[in-house]
Image (spheres, one colour):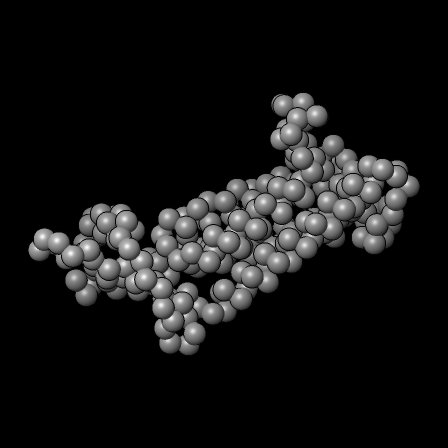
Amino acid sequence: SGGHAPAAVARADALPRLRSRGPNGRRRLCVRARPGKNMAAPVLRVSTPRWERIARFLVCLLGILLSVYAFHVEREKSRDANYRAMCDLSNSISCSKVFGSRWGRGFGLFGSIFGNNSAINQPNSVYGLLFYVFQLLLGMTVSAMAALILMTTSIVSVMGSVYLAYILYFVLKDFCIICITTYALNFILLVLNYKRLVYLNEAWKQQLKRD
């Protein structure tokens, strides 16, 4: 029944895992019971579609590249106020204007809280780079805990994207191509992570039905 699902999840999540390849090139996680008393733990097989892994890799890779480029633009703008980036198309369509503003570091908040010279008050691109690397690496792990962490961090990133989009449109009155693209990537990752949770949930439902 549904009331026993959490206990089964917690129990299986703590057991040894063996990875193998299933049909259609899907990666499969097998959770096996430890030998011992007559208590038999469930065996769970979770398949991650190949397209999901490819999509995650491409989204994270693009996010990493955009974050590195944004960091480059921010650094150049801080050295040369007249610097013009490739993404600067006009006065109202400029990424260097955004990256060089107070909102381009620490989301416009950390500087006020911790001080402008604080190590926490980094360019937004640094946080973006860490986020995409984290999503890429943790996404290689097929487990319930990893899926929950991926989903939680994605929700935070989308909330941050909405906040920065508001600043971009209503405060800076600018259209930043790099910024808008990263917001879209964050939303795509949210969808991918949600689908992964659905895969895990369906796998447990099927497991409980068989048991």
